[in-house]
Image (tube, rainbow, N blue to C red; front, side, top):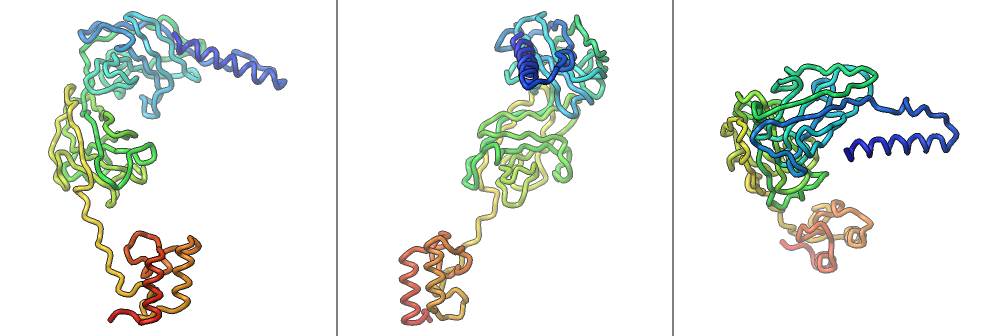
Length: 328
């Protein structure tokens, strides 16, 4: 009910804003088309409450482009309203949000309209321009969402889990884990839960988690990873999807990456062009690097300890080599 009030308030604000700048606005033109009714849960995982609500989601194209709107129903046989932008065919899914996170997860009772277990088999709801009311929905525990679920935690030092560098979990259907994954999950915090859904209950997954440093959804060679369970290479171990397959957890660091190459020792600090001499020009280049005016790469031989900077001690060592020659 609060969601419906917020939608109405938002539309009213738009009308007032446009009217204030001299535009004549027809409030009907801004009104979304509503689908409303009541929803009932008849299973054994209740009772329905504010912490165990029924979720009603509506989408188009069998949810391939995501949901358009959602309603939270905190009481059994409670009212819901979801909006769509235009008249047409839409699809409904409703479920008991046991987690609760507002999303359909593995192990949650659910149903697609009308009495179907998958979006591919769901019947479309034909919504006219006038909308629909009194659409009664009901479901029980006949369909429990299957798939795989768990948590992923990265303990290494190659990066920090964030919205820009998320953890990714991928599920392939072949042990070599080549090709496009069947499903992916993207986690923005360490220890978050992932869910990869498959209502068929008849597949085997091969799973991998990795720190997606460039957020491209694909593991690159420099990105830390783990193949379930604690494996660094294929073939992967099979995981059979099921309604109760919720403990497939990943905890990994940098153990499956090759160690970084050991930097070659600098034989003559300040010998930027490797001619076994240190000149005044090379000393000046090191000073510019130390002041931050030139990149370290212009004189890698000045960075004796490979810390990507040039310090006074390294400049003094280079001066000594300029005066007394490089070591033999």
